[in-house]
Amino acid sequence: MENGSLLHEELIKLSRNPFFHMALQRVNLMRRLMEYRTEVNRERLVEQCTEHLETLTLLKRGNVADTSYLMCQRLGGALKRKSPRAWNCAADPKNTDDHAIQDHAK
Image 1: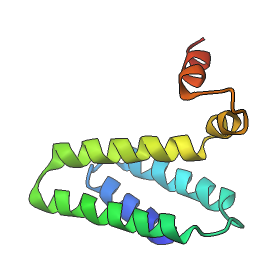
Image 2 (image 1 turned 45 degrees about the vertical axis):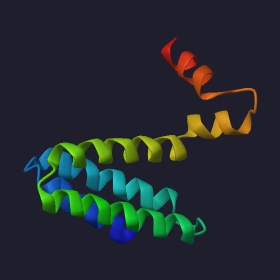
Image 3 (image 1 turned 90 degrees about the horizontal axis):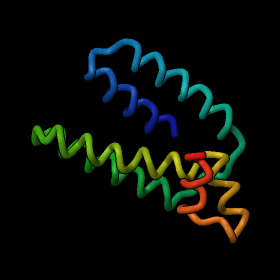
Image 4 (image 1 turned 30 degrees about the vertical axis):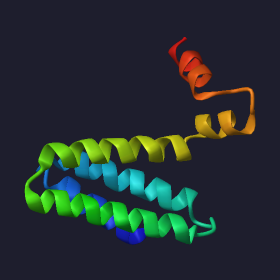
């Protein structure tokens, strides 16, 4: 996890926005706390490394828009996997993503 966090921090530094960088550092601190005693999913770790390499390849080619889209998609997926709202929906088989979105909109 540490290497992924460092990669994310280095990428956000490219924005030259110190507020984004500070915010990400705080998020990473909270994430470390939450994931302190969790079991490492090695399959997911390989998937994340592959995603990071794809991101770096796009950046190296100068495809900033494609990189931005890719990162947005992946961060959205991470949010779904890690948010308590997603856990609640996963625990209740009657809840679907459509219902969760509708409930959230209320």
